[in-house]
Every structure is written in structure tokens, then in C-alpha cells.
Amino acid sequence: MWGDYIRLAVDGIAHRKLRSWLTMMGVFIGIMAVVTLISLGQGLQKYIDYQFEKIGGDRILVTPGGGGFSSGAPGGSLTSAKLHDDDLDIVKKTRGVETALGLIMQTATIGYNNKNKFLSVVGIPTDAEYLPFLRDFEYAKVGKGAYLKKGDRFKAIVGPATGKDVYGKELDVGGRITVNDVEFVVVGISAETGNPAINRRVIIPQDTAKELFSKQDDYAMFGVKVQKGFEPSDVAEKIKERLRKHRNVKEKEEDFSVQTFENIIASFKIVLNMLTIVLSGIAAISLIVGGVGIMTTMYTSVLERTRQIGIMKSIGARNSDILFIFMAESGILGLVGGIIGVVFGLFASFIGENVVRYYGIKEYALYAGPDLILGALIFSVLVGCASGYFPAKRASTMKPVDALRYI
Image (cartoon, rainbow, N blue to C red; front, side, top):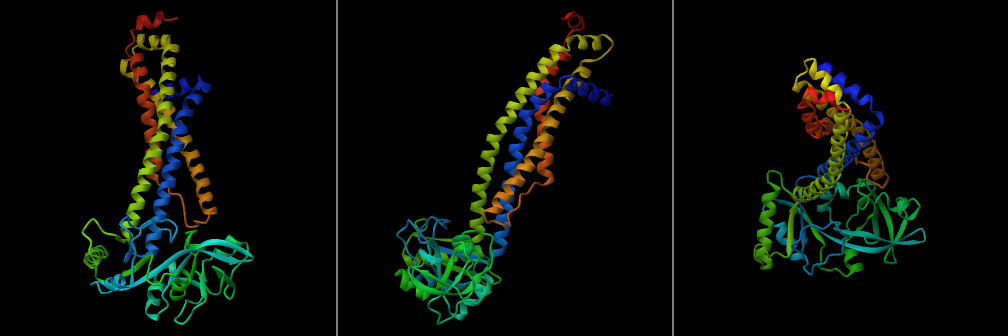
């Protein structure tokens, strides 16, 4: 029985090839857009999770200002609040804190290969006590050469992409650069992180950075490592409490922000999810257009096959038989449109993935799980069936005598 329904539905589509293809275009364009956006969005979420794993869940960031961590240019803060040495001492003495260090960040003119570029410069402490923290922190690891050590003044560690990508010439250990016209010797190359901005930064000793940028007691952020056995969220709350008391500010009126990396990643994910939903909603409008196209095609099909419907009813076909035939036809239009949309969507996602990798985020990969593909196909079939229901209902309720008289 069901095989007969499918066969009749396929025959109906085959007799109107051009119209059927045009009808399916609205569906496959919508499905393609949805699959592309969701697969790229899920890939970005996987990338964020990967970065979080590399950073480590036992890290806390303390930044000036009440707006939390900013992804903008270092040194470009819009807040007048500052972090000082006495704030760092308070953080270090908080229960559950294993290590805490202050970081100076500034955009500076970096000269190499007879070119000057504005790059991010990070001033880090060089005391031996901080070396385990830096070695364990993915974004501070050295991939080649040496770490900065106490007593170093005009030595630097550069990102792996600083030389060739920025200046068009490889920059290796032993090379020389200038920071605001002051010459530095490169002693190390940072490990590859997958983040283009991090891969192009320059790291110099903190004492030198203080002199160079006139920041004797002004930190861009504190990096904190939590002791084993303590929850980062609990330690973060304790740091907030102690800093509020020290800086004499009330709760919710803080001029600083304390965030775990889990909080930061969650914030990025919320924004990403909202963006994906909005863009997918916009893309789904084409699915509505596709559904209207299917409905129009099915109404036309009902009119063209009115006599055929009358003949089928006169020889014993029930209303449900007619309904299922036309519903199957509209469902097949949706399914085929969905299959084409999924294929083109995955192809478009693959192109997007390679574009992202080309621009430096090499660990990025699209994610199109079976749930996405199956969901897209089911959705396209539902759109087809829903769009074809009313034309199918009209066909099933025709009276045989009226249908046979139709010319």
C-alpha cells in the first residue's frame, strides 16, 4: 500500500520535472543556509572548548573596570580604574590562590626588517617563582629558545607568526627587533596557539616594560592559578570580597572584575548561540518561501489531476488514499530539497572552514554531527508535508462526479 503511494507520488513529480526542481530550490537554499551556519557555529564552539582546555580550568583573571574581560586591544582600556601592587598582594594572600602575577599590556611600535608595525606587547615577571605558572599556561609557553629570566632587560620572546606573517621575513632566536625604537634581542619563540593575535605578540621583561611604557604601578590584569582542591569559582568570589574591602567599594559597584576562564568561555558561547539562532532564523525565512512554493505547486497539481482523482475515487480509492498520495508527493519534494541542501550546506561549510584556517586559526574545524543532518532532513520533510497538507486535503474531499466533469 505505502509502496503504491510512493510510486504514484514519484510519478507525479517526474511528470513535472522543471516545476519540481524550481519548487525544491526554495527548500534546499534554506536548508543549505541553516546547515552552513549551524555547522560553522558548532565548530566555533568546539574551538572555544579546545582553547579552554589548553588554558586550563584552574585560572582566574582579574581586570580593572567592572565590565569584565575585554577582547579588545591590550592597553586600550576605556576605564580609569587601575590595578596596583597592593591589589596584587591582596590576591596573593587569598586562600586557595597558588600563584598570582601581574601583567602589563601595551600596544607599541615594533620594528623589524626595516618595517614598523603596531603590535601587542606583554610585560611579564621574570622571577623564578613564576616560571612554573608560565610553563603551564598555554599562551605563555615557549616553543623554541628560552624563557625570560631574572636579570634580562632588553630581551624578548616573540610569537611564531610575528616575523613572516607581519614583516615578511622569518624571525628566529638571536634576531633583533625594536620596541618603541629600543633594541631587543629575541631569546625565544612562543608556542603556536591557534590564535592569530596571540601568535603575533611580543613578550618582554616586566621591569623593562614599566620603564618603557611609564607603568610603574599599573597592571592590565592579574593572572591567578588556583590551588588543587579549591573550586575556581569559590576562590574568585573570595578574591572579589577581599578586593572590595581593600578598594572600599560596594558589591555590584566594583571598579574591577574577577572571572574564571569558565565564565569567560560561557559568555562567548552565549553570544555565539544568540548569533547562530538569529542567523539561522533569517535563513529559515527561505524555508517558508520554499514551503509556499511547494503549496503552490501542489494546488496546481491537484487542479491538473482532478480527473485522475475522480477516476481513482470512482474505482474505490478512499479519501485517506488520495490524501496520502499528495502528502507523499509534497514530502518527497521537501526531502529531496533537504538532501540537496545538506550536501551544498556541508560543501559551503567546508569552504568556510578553510577560509578560517587560511586566516590563522588552524585548529578550527566545522562540526556537522548526525543530529544536525538528520534534523535538517526531518525538518525539510515536515515543511514539505505541512505545505502540501491543504492541497492534499482539498484533493481528498473532491466528489467523484464533480472531479470527472472537470476539464
